[in-house]
Image 1 (cartoon, rainbow, N blue to C red):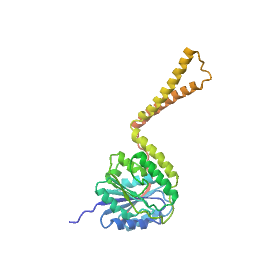
Image 2 (tube, helix red, strand yellow):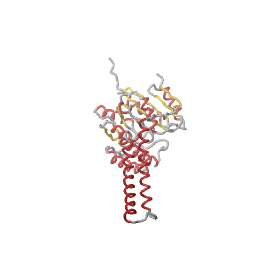
Image 3 (tube, rainbow, N blue to C red):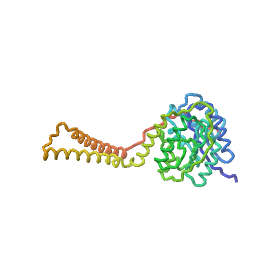
Image 4 (cartoon, helix red, strand yellow):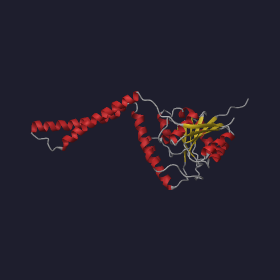
Length: 316
């Protein structure tokens, strides 16, 4: 009786990478074909070049290929989310399409999953990128590690391996893809590992990410921290701020009233009075925001959808 091979789903988000796709598929196949049943899910995030035509050709030639094409560019997080939803393997791997990450690292990462890790993140220790990318990335990774408490050297590495139950629970948007280890950790998956991986210089095309991704990344980190701690209880956050402003404003107002009634000090020309009233109004506004947040959370609905133009699957 033939042994059933473990299935691995490899998800490749891409944008204008037509020159890399065939070579990347060959490298993935060479790394996995001997030991695994596998599928490669290419998610075309609105490419303007011939990437989709290359993927259509690959799908005709190889039964392991699935392609998903967006009508426009939504961003890497949405591309990964759709890839996760389409994956059927017990292990799920993500890898960028630019050939800088080496698919030969995948079996080693899967072995770490077998040994008990829930998630394994790649670490590009010897990164082959210009200094304009490496220095901001090191700063970003250091700050993120300190804020989140997760000891990873490279949150931005596109090469990651997951057990299937993790990706089934993800809901990515914005720049959240770089925080998947944090999302998994908050969801109770605490065995997060790291593997040093080979990093190659870019062979084709140019990077699709600029300095703005780090700024957006920090903003998304703040969003995540707020969502994790206060999404289900927004009144605790806004109510606390509102209470502070109300107490301060009320204290100032009471002080001024006492000074007027008992010490015959006039309030005209006293900026402190206006400041006290401002604090009271801010306090009321924060309380109102907290109440609205509670109502929105109780009645929230997910209404964002991705407009998929076409899906192709390898010919069996």
